[in-house]
Amino acid sequence: MAVKKASSREDLLHFIDESRRKLWTLNLRRANFFPTRSTKICSKHFTADCFETAKFGGTWLKQNAVPTLFDLPPEQQKIPMITLPPIKRKPVISVKDDASIRRRCSYLGDFKEEDMECPEKAKKALSAAKEVYTKQKAQIRRLQLKLRRLQDKTIRLQKKSESKKRKRSTLEKASLVSKMSSNWRNGIKGVLLDITGVLYESGQGAIPGSVDAVNRLRDNKIPFRFVTNETQRTCASLVTKLRDFGFTLSESDVISPGVAVAAYLKQKMLRPLLLVHPELLPEFSDCDQSSPNCVVIGDAADYFTYENMNQCFQLLLASENPVLISMGRGKYYKENGQIVMDLGGYTCALEFAAGVEATVIGKPSSDYFMNAVESLGLLPCETVMVGDDINSDVGAAKNCDLKGVLVRTGKFREVDLQNSSVKPDAVVDNLAHFVEILLNEKEP
Ligand SMILES: [Mg+2]
Image 1 (cartoon, rainbow, N blue to C red):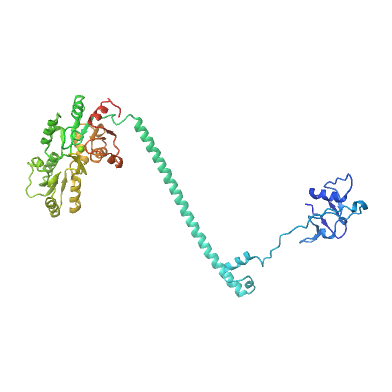
Image 2: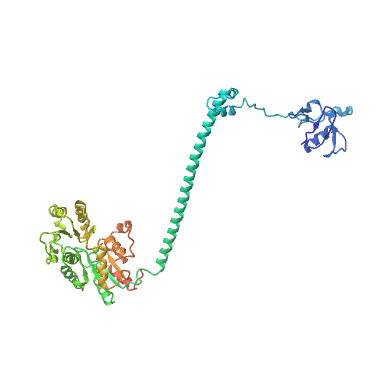
């Protein structure tokens, strides 16, 4: 600092400050005089207003003080002395005038600063202060608890996020491994074939290439079964129809719901009330149908009248242990080029009205698929199901650990494939395309 202590008597002051040292030297007007930090000047060369009394005692030289009192020769006295403008100091705000401090006093309610002079009022102020303190302490505790909860939640969310990232990473790796490990063809030894929509189009003829495709499976000694939900005709009638289309097969090659349900009824000694297509009735000729104690429902088509449905409902309602057997749960199928309602809707109607759960013997029942796989003498993982229904054929087969291939014939719709949660192992143009891929003649 360039301010030096000065007393009433004459003192020697240092030329400490670099900037003012130059001004002081100019006012001295001595030739070849170069002061250093240790050079001193007498306090008598400063005017009285260059000094000020400090707060804590003593007299101090002001920061803008410049020596101006010198006995100079007359010619030098004509040159005015250099001085510095007075220092502008910030106004000192007293505690009483400070508005912010006054506002702070109001935190204690209506008490004013001067109230603290009175013991009674001071006591009240203290009590109010304690109350404020207690409230604020409670609020701090609440905020701390809230903060802890949020921190816990953050940790939980971070863990959840990390877990999801790990799962995603695992799935991506699994997907990559799946793609890399050749394809669904590996280890396949047998085939299950849907009939309607795969071998032939309903109301039309055989799908081009399908007759030859079935023959090629047989020629290559790949065992296969036809797994159908066809319930508008008997198995024998269906086989005849397929033979007419050019297919070579026997009844033992076909797994049909009519035959399976008839066997089930005999095994369980059940007497059915049949709501089925008249063409299917011969399948149940050996079943006792007197005093029915269960309902069997198939694709009755035009015979799904209110009267027939209500008769089934009445029987279920009157039974102590109602038994409803359905030959499938398909939503729709294609007939004569049109998508039409399948058995699933009628089954659901009876389930809803009578409050029972149907026993499904047909696709998508897992028992139905497992019976077909067992008839081939294979394991589910060695078998592939080929169908045109993404749910009842592909999805149900995959649930049983079979591979599932969807054909773009029959009831196939691109929108079903896009919206379904079922992911087929492959989607092929038709049965012929499937056989070409299976026999390694084409890449999947
Ligand atoms: Mg089909």
